[in-house]
Image (cartoon, rainbow, N blue to C red; front, side, top):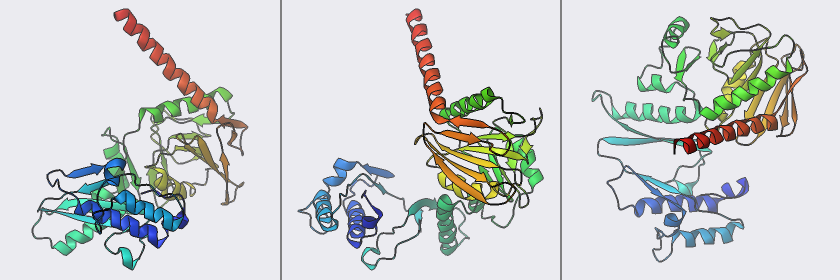
Length: 352
């Protein structure tokens, strides 16, 4: 359910509407055979209200619009059906305490976990606690998910074990002070963007700056965190067998909706503990904008600036005069994609 401002989102009338729609969805759910039942905007709008079945949810929403004085839109709904041996646990970050909506949990972010009991010796209370912790971890990444599932939170992994295992697997993992996270596979557009980003930097031939390989890892000072950045620049030339760098000068991260919170919070905080680091560039390819954090001289103070599509992003202010221009990167990507399409079409015509 969408509204236009935070002011309305905090309004009790709007929150009551959210609770009413959620409970009406459950009350109108007839198909119990499917694990998930999706409702699009049209299907959701025509469902009868829980309190007055002569009115639809669209009617109830219209009344809310008149009350709050702002447009409110029903967008989508999902109903989860669980089997007898399954349970649900949930977590809301920044949960709202509202007596009139007690049956519906609300907050800034929410997660729902569907789980079943395998070990009959574990009490339901323990299951509920672990599942709730897992729900929280899905949002805050405060614990490694794999560790929670194994009920082994108190046993961190040695750095040497991580390094040995990482060299033997194709799946990328990050090491966070004793715990290991599997990274999602990078999209092809990510690698294409990084390729053109690297090319733009190489063309400038910035003195004493080297582009490290895409699979290079960055290690922070103790407590040790090891991350895979999107791109890393250093004053030291990369070695053939180099897998980790401890002295990055510039780190570039591409931001997606799923990685934004983790990169801008935990990852950023740990990056800034690295003494050699001068600049962190965060790029939102979908929004075509960038946020740049600069270290002020040799101090630990950082300043922040924002750049748009046409702006020139200063690169390595402390040791060079390079720059990045997002519009050039996007134009080069489009040209390459179009070239590939034309080549494919020509090949297709010839085969015909």
